[in-house]
Image (cartoon, rainbow, N blue to C red; front, top):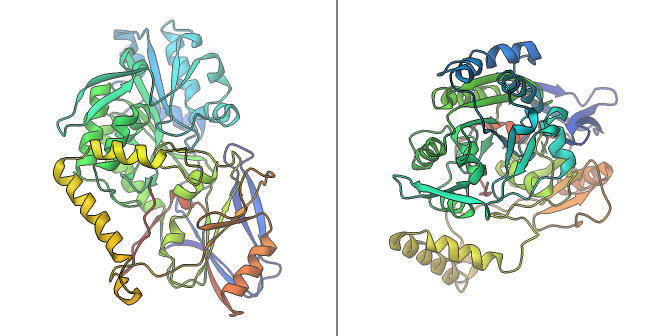
Length: 463
């Protein structure tokens, strides 16, 4: 049974409360609901939040290797490195960093000698405000380093699947590497976390190959023996990332589950938990679908990549709404930018992608592109592909913390407004005055895995 709350159209002044503004307020926003909207909110089924004492108990009993204090007694680290995912991932690292600093202090290392590498991959460098909130005040005295996929890299070899591995020099020069990450669904690997954390510390060429040479598994699909995960596991071992703290959060960003130690042992179990706890029904059949992009609503780029998944699986004719703060404006992803493409980006992307392909892969790609161009010259009735997707209404982006001028009003597939009244009127127009309206709400869409439905087709969004 789904964990859901149904807000009846007969309720007095019904409101929908959604959390918004990750790292920038993290507060609730109440949205008034029209009387003819019958709203079902699909909440995750997560356990109660953990206390600091409960978290520390798990960290003291890691899976697959001795506790840190025992490891450090035998071989005290002199150049430790903590690898943390960047603020575009909602991992509350500030809850566990103090524990690690205490462990290092017990073997004589000052905080100023501890390095924290923000594994931002091909994302834009994080802004100070969100980064400090993610890492917490105790990390301010450490050496906080931001990964650059173009600079300060070391080639450490080639995987058995022929992927050249360029990794941040700080990883190579460390005598103890520990990661802090989470388990979140995505399109490329099914789920992030585990060995995928190391991807954020790799060079652009390696990241590009991992994204372009393997077919994406699909949002929230369970990882298995696919070549992508084989490559990531091998790269993690080559890089020395053998210990990880995995934090799982609820829809309010509270930690509800912790796993620590050898992630090669516990990763599958953590993914299974995430799929079960955040499972939600498909959105087909709803007249209106609302996708709350929290806790990935930091910027427009990542709202588009992480926050609209339920909106790609709607019935034709459904009204589509995404709720997000976009506190840092556009945001940026060097590999898959949204709207703000740099000059010659597409050309450079194509050249690099072609250089990573085998001759057979390149021939298949060119043939597919030529085929699509030929279709343009055919009559309209002959251009329809049997698997083509039906047209959908544009997405309304309801922005909860507007800043003048930092986002355009119209985007390729979105319309931006900070007026909830405007969206309600637009929905009535799209639905031609139909009453009542069946409304589905996904309150933490970036964390939710939506069950597939028969005959359902999904729009592709790069991750």
